[in-house]
Image 1 (cartoon, rainbow, N blue to C red):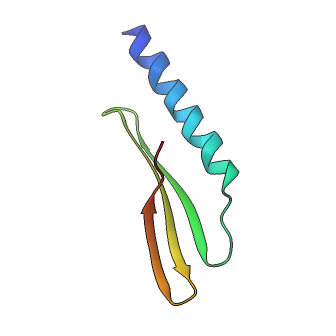
Image 2 (image 1 turned 60 degrees about the vertical axis):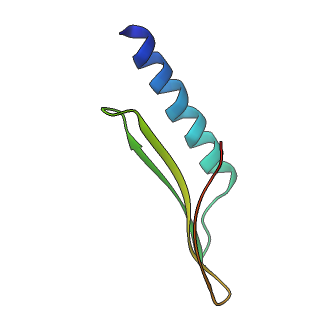
Image 3 (image 1 turned 90 degrees about the vertical axis):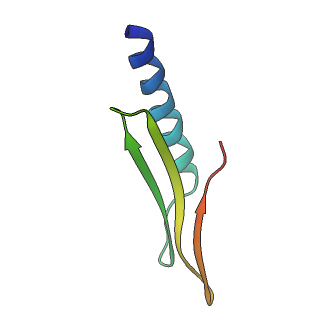
Length: 60
């Protein structure tokens, strides 16, 4: 079980590092969504780019 907790921590830190590389601005936010209990980690770009809605996952 210790390995699973370590792997979850590594994935969470990696996602946080990637999120910090694409900071939010006035129109588009970078959102990190984590669920350690279930092992789900999502990194999204959400907002408006000109007149287009942006709601896109990052591919890791």
